[in-house]
Length: 177
Image 1 (cartoon, helix red, strand yellow):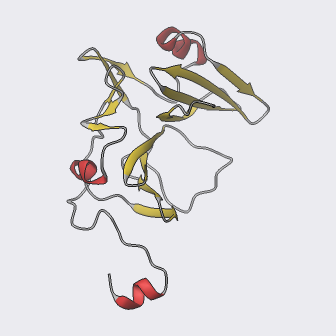
Image 2 (tube, rainbow, N blue to C red; image 1 turned 90 degrees about the vertical axis):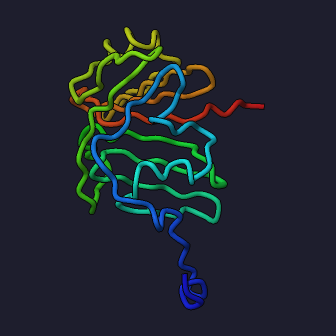
Image 3 (cartoon, rainbow, N blue to C red; image 1 turned 60 degrees about the vertical axis):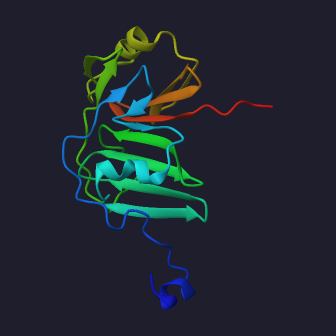
């Protein structure tokens, strides 16, 4: 990064030098709560196996998102540590996007065994079978959001108004003090 880039407030690309992203995206392990070998709290360098993202977006000096548009997922880092994962499963009418997204059907693993995929056709009932009763449900005319707390993590599933799964967000649960 040049002196002028720093002077103009341009942030460094933490993925510079990484290889290209290669499909398919890794499985999400429900036992380990990991995305391939990437575990929550890991340093940014641990994510290099994923390759370069489509877009790096800084929110502030300590938080940035890596969007893998052709992979259908986003990973975020806070203070340089993996803190958030989103699987982009289907169109989201409430979020206009200038970036073309390839939607993903995330593969799930549990106890070392493949246990299926989540798709746009995955239902609220299927998620309840897989995770039990949701901790919280928020429903309005635009979307349905189910939250499941699991081993210190929030699993948040967003459905559109037609009850089609559009997004799965995973992040460590912050305890209220």
